[in-house]
Image (cartoon, rainbow, N blue to C red; front, side, top):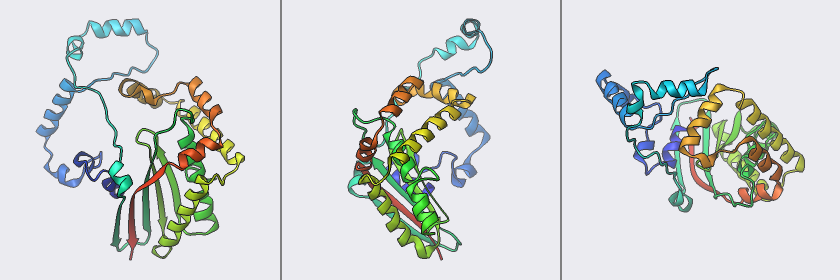
Length: 272
């Protein structure tokens, strides 16, 4: 996926380096560099403090206001506005890369971007479409590419709501790469044509609902929710609106999203 990400963000140098860095940067890093970076971050970046536990809100806020950090935290901070890639150039000119290495298992990584969701379409339609395509063990990719035709050891898709990216990964033998690619394209076409059942839609709805409930039963969920609430509140749905979007979801919505899929990048790692 790192190679695929490099293709997707080929014109953005900041995104060419993985979030965890690389050996080139790590070898140059010193303790003083880290210290200066942390100082700059604390002084300039937006700070969000999450407090977990049975605390009195008023007492906590009063304590913060009366602390030495109070005036410091109220200093002017960098603009927290965020922007997202549109991938317009890649839609017109998709990028492809193939590498050969002495490895046992080949890898296939594909990237697509979906059109912006129409207001009349459920916000959850792209995620449901992903589940039907390859985001679940009942999906078309899993059942057709892996189980029925044995063209891959693993295959799955993932949808990224913030960036509107859909990615597909497969681990397979070098000799089956082209066959697998053809079958993957067919499954995408089937979803675009509405060749999926109401039972699959209901299954996708159930999975989305269950995952929401499971994820919300963790401290990390509320921390991330708080962060996004401050950075990009439009990306959030409360429980009531989430259920409304789930109830609103139908087959036409999923088809419309699928028909707005654009191929933008493909990476093949072929084992010799």
